[in-house]
Amino acid sequence: MTYDSTRGNASLRHEINNSLTLISSRLQLLAARYVFLKEDSDFTEIQNDLSDIQRLLNYDRTARQPQLTLCSLQPLLNELYTSFLPVLHAQHIALYLHIAPNLPAIRADLSLIRQALINLLKNAAEASPDGGQITLSASSDDCNHIVLSVSDTGNGMTPEQQAHIFEPFVSYKTGGTGLGLAIVQSIVSAHHGHLSVKSLPGSGSSFCILLPIPLSPVEKSAQ
Image (cartoon, rainbow, N blue to C red; front, side, top):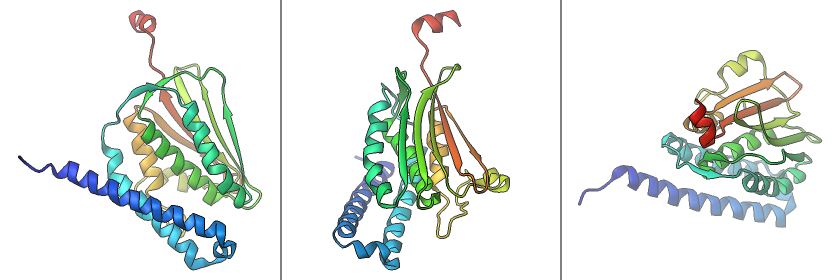
């Protein structure tokens, strides 16, 4: 019997991630119980460090081939909205969810799509000031794609920043790892999709994910 180092590393990474998630949850409970902690810079830095470690642990995982299944994105989008709403409300940031009716099913790895959207929502939150707005939306276009977008009213980016924003270890945030958007890019590419950004300094940013909708048997036969 041989030892599968890849599987062993994945298992270890999974266990470490679980422990970090528990620590992060307990920190959130403490912040809810003792409101003054939200104003403590050391407490905030601990939360940021945990988030950075989780991103580093997850970076290699996104290189695997996604486990594609036919699925609806609506439950995932509703879950993310419910999870982020109280957190953003505490930061005085409004969150809106727009899902087009009759959104088509796609073949996707929901755990990876979830990770990509969480990264985009976290980035939007970090870029948004008090009174800002974030919009998570989903629709379909005329080219057989699901269109997922996360838009904010934050600081925005220059064209020079946008040119490098998806490169690993490139960050324009203080203390940032530069892995969040690289992870999103890796996930989207693994789904044969496309990731883009529109942004202007002072006018916010909008990140758009295009994911292919599987063709019906009739459409396949017509090709």
